[in-house]
Image (cartoon, helix red, strand yellow):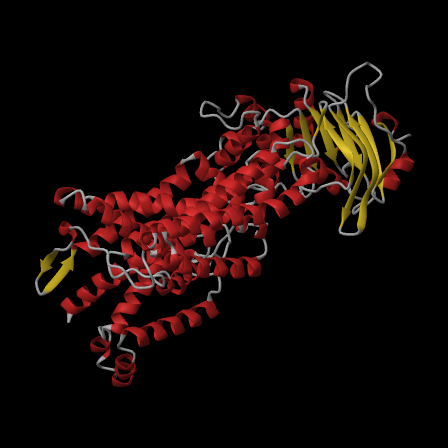
Length: 248
Length: 386
């Protein structure tokens, strides 16, 4: 259970996301400490840890909403440090935030159209919402005219994932997608994310507390006090790790 | 009594439409972006002065062309103030998002600068400013393309700023000495200037004893066109969708790939451009001076706040309500309606002049906001968060 980044994986593939020696501060408070993390192509990596250990801070730093004091973030060979959040989105990072953050006074269709902005050339006139999104989340097809703020929590979560997907991301970042969602919808979301990885080859970096969902991932990183303290295959997730890092 | 009531209603709508046109730009800048722009009135004033300049240019073209100058002036006023707004956003406001007090003070400072600028602007000043901008910003652009720019940027500023200012001052002085008064005389001066409405706007429709001036109708139509145009832009265009997204959730919009800085600049430029259009319209109603915008700034903020910050429909209702209330109270059109209640009629008669009517309307607004602090149509989404 050693935490370190890899220049290439055992099968010779390059990591799609490679974070090395990342240190982030809020003022003088040291939040992230020497974080190293890698996500392989087409892999689903889960970040676990108790509340307040810095998981969301790490995601926000990857997205460019926070600036690290030291360290590097590399996406497919390109350093992201000088890129703004919108440039990072167009480089292929799709984001599903904690709390979903659907734009409430825009319709479902308008929220989905906004997702097209993340395509490398930005939104073009000829761009349309891909049909695959509605195959993954059929409920959205019948709600295109409804306001985003009027949807239930589960529907908003599906819309948030769909919105990130229409930008054709190379890396999908999900921050606690099952938080506050009813159990039946959690299973739907789990299945959808797994299907996305299998069918599109997109890599996923997931922050999650729900054990069943964590087990869907290929690899896990455990965080404590702002640092990565353990990592390994989710097949090897021991009861000790689960109790230490998943109990809220 | 009914005729005077209808007269009062139309005059109120007419005043309300001027207020609304002035508030429309503010509804975008303050309402949607959350930026308290104290220089909004001065942007209106610049729009009014642009109209004056275009009018003078068209005078030389002769009579048939002069009748059409107002349309060219509207476009020019929009473009000039939009460009000025763009410079203001990129130079000042961009650095102050999320800091309302600093924004208020900085834009108030800008309003003072703009007022003094129109008093003092002359060929010497324009040449000096032009030379300074070309030298300083041109050199900074070249430097920004050099390697290791961060290391030399600070020193470059320290050297370039006095150097560019010195050369600009010298160039201005040389022009002043060569051409004397022709170059140093202020274009407008401190005195008010008059904009003459085209001939076809100086007439009116006679309705019984009441004359409906075409100028007022023109402003009413212009207001409606601007509202429909803004609504269509915000609801139907790609940039409108981006603006609506960014103003509701800036960080999420950025994570979706929306260039938020460009959206901010565009939104501010459009809001400023609308202030210019409003300035063009008010120049038809009276003389234009450096303080023209000051007469409208408080009223326009009231319209946006009473309507509900971020709600265009709220601004429309509030502008009409404030305009009608102002006129009805000021023209003593309400007291005959309540003659059965002599005490109330007496109070209304006490407030029956323009300045006292404003006092009563503002008192009513303050009372209204005690009960509905978020205005007639409260915002449901999130305001701009950074």
